[in-house]
Length: 365
Image (tube, rainbow, N blue to C red; front, side, top):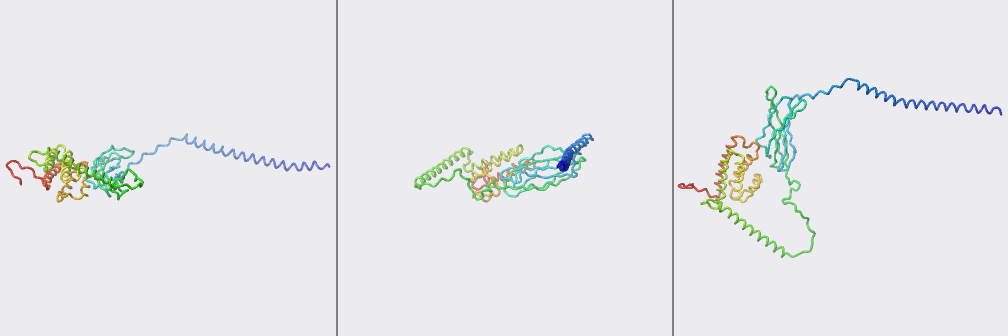
């Protein structure tokens, strides 16, 4: 009975040692966990102090000027629909103190009309200059076309001119009917009605006959009104058949007299008079059709032999009217006057048109 307390004391000793060891391990883990954030915070503070206390970082040096003169041509958009416009921009990058004269427009670009030219201000960037020239063009023919290659001269500060070659840039012109190539008439605005009961054909036939008779009567009235408008305009001694030719000749002589002061207005007036004369003589819609559309149609019977000459005349007048610098040179104005004088002979030689009356005392050839 006296040995029981000794055994209980011996059994409690290992349990106490295990508890002390467990507490020591917990304290060691807590000290390690608390020391890691403290070390990280200390390192961050030291890094910030070093960065703030050091000397200022010098700014980055400006970009070096380009070693060579560079240039390029950009066409935007690269694909246009027939009749739409596009912008052609020529950019030349040079070192400072260099000068680039405005780039001249090409004489002609197949498939395109040059509408205008613009020279934006020089853009100054660190270490270089950007010289730009913009052209506004309109597509007049479908297919693959290209802005031609050009050579630009760059003037150095010493006065030396350095040529810079610019490569050609393609431009694709597509038709507006490419989504429906087999359709020749516009789509209707109504959906087809559902099939109903079959009706008789007498009422639609009578209605169609009435519409046809009304159309014939309207055409006759319009023709008589046109003849009535032409007859008073004819000069004394000039028949109604010769009145269109006389009006065209009078308009051409007025355009020739106007050519020295206003060559562009003279070209416009001559083109309008000639197109009206051909429309009244042949019935072709020359006043609202382009030269390319007229060339695609069959030649009229009255002008079958001279139709190529008429098309060439229309194309040459269009070139003077729509080209950016078509009539700026004196040589172009002289060529316009000579071409209008030839147009007088072309009108006088049209089959079925009476020659002009000869002055008193002379005979017709």
